[in-house]
Amino acid sequence: MSGAVADATKPRLRKQPRRRLSRRQEQRRRILRAALVTAFLLLLHPLAFLPVARRWRLRLRPPGALAETRLLAACIKCGQCVQVCPVEAIHLADVEDGLGVGVPYIDARFQACDFSCDAISCVLACPTGALSHAVARKEEVRCGLARLARPDACLARQGKGFQGLARGVKFQGRLRYEEVDRWNPIPVHDHPYDRELCDLCVLECPIGETALALEPVPDERGVPRMTPTVREGCVGCGVCEMICPQEPTCIVVDERKTWGRA
Amino acid sequence: MSFLDDVAVMLGRAPRKAKRHTDAAEIAHGRKRGKGLEVTRLLEVLAAAPKSHTWRNRRWAVLISVNLLFVFSFWLDIQVLEGSLTASRFLGFHLADVYSSGLIMLSEKHVAVNLVIGSATVLLLWGLIGGRSFCSWACIYHLVAEWAESLHLKLAAAGIVSDHVLHRGIRSLLWVLFAALAFATGQALFLTLNPIGILSRALIYGPSLALGWVLLLLAFEVVYSRRAWCCYLCPIGLTYGVLGAATPVRVRYNLERCAHEGECRKVCEVPHVLEMTIKGRAPDTRVDVGPDCTRCGLCVDACPTRSLEFEVKGLSRLL
Image 1 (cartoon, rainbow over the protein chains, first blue to last red):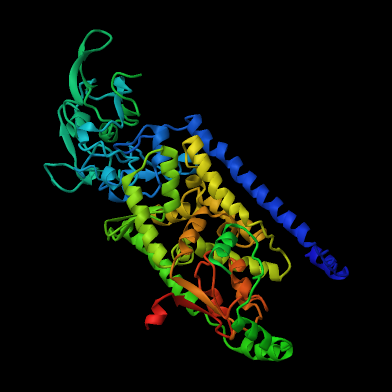
Image 2 (cartoon, each protein chain N blue to C red):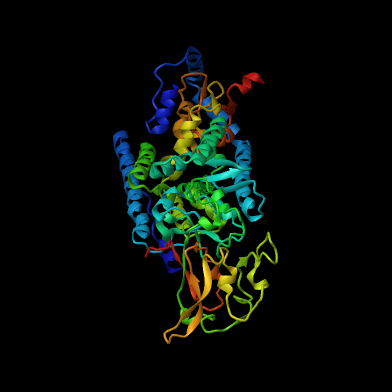
């Protein structure tokens, strides 16, 4: 308020009439401004590369995704893969991914790819081949590799069973249970389990025993314990990571990892 | 103005005065000499007439419908127009933004068949219906920038901000630079910066932090330079502009009706295409507006003497 009063008592300062620039001066300024804007846009280049170069975030990519840097280059960031996914597993990355802004990824713990589209719709939808059309069947997909990250917490290894809802009532994820509905995925919270020995990850694996199976593996005292064991057929879809009833999950997918390579 | 002159102006050259006028144009110019006062009086009458927004309203309706079609195709799963403005499928047919597709193929050094098909469809479609009409009739950023522009004009009228013109050659430079960088680095940086993609995706798939970049651009336009992205920077717009050089849909200028009061240039996003409306400039009695024109129709609405009107070459003669 006091400022306003002070302003009112002061005589209003009139703006000085602008000095008219000659045509050449004006032209020079236009070029200077254009040059500054260009310089600024070019400076953004390394900024966008940074998250990629530093590998700030490794993402689980949809089936058929090319190698990371090629994926970022080939993706036109249109989101058609997002639209066709029946379980809405695919999301588009934001600015913290730098060049990867608008590139699709999957957060398997919240919603894994369960191949309930059968046809690998996202690959078919991709107009650029960033999700490579070389992949035609789910068995050919290589998103990553599952790994039993917390063997001690694994219910199967403890010899325990599992009854009830895998992820609780609030969990929004969906899965296609062929015995319930061959064509449509249903919410995981509508599908209670009753297993004498917990084998949810093995049970729901879309690939089957060529990818994940319970095997007796001796613990540190030499007692054999039934253990979910990842096999060469694993495609890294992440269903095991999503369905694991332990919190946090015992089994995770290592993004982009392939069999036989570190 | 010749065809090549028009293209040169779009690429960044300043418009030049035509060296020769046709006889009919000479007569029309001559008739208007020394009639300043008469025209001023006429304009006062015309200025009192209610302002028309016919074309703007039609255009906004189309632009919003197109973008809602994207949104509903996803939300309600009606599957008519799937994807976003960078690439999509219309009833299953591929559509792909030409410049973005080009950048991807340059960075990948690989020709993707679907992108070629999508780009060819877009070339054909927008080549037929007006080139940069993509900008004003479909591009979501254009709409938001129009709102920012009206804010800029209000602030400018109050003397708070002023417009700073950039050299228009920068857009051609950036067009080449982004392509060269995509080829050299193997990554299409432009797609990261592209505010059209960011806005379109945010609208369809939900808001993102990337919108901050769009807000920054809009703030730059409000505070510093009117319509900077659309007018000086956007390589996508330039690509469609090249298409527009050959399109039959354009705005046509009628010298005999014109009162040269300049309402059209005040509302125009790219006023360099309307140089011929300055008194004594038009080389002929009828002049087609150049390819950088976005066919937004604001000048058609603003013109008090109906000297600027939409024209479809060939069609008008047939009718």
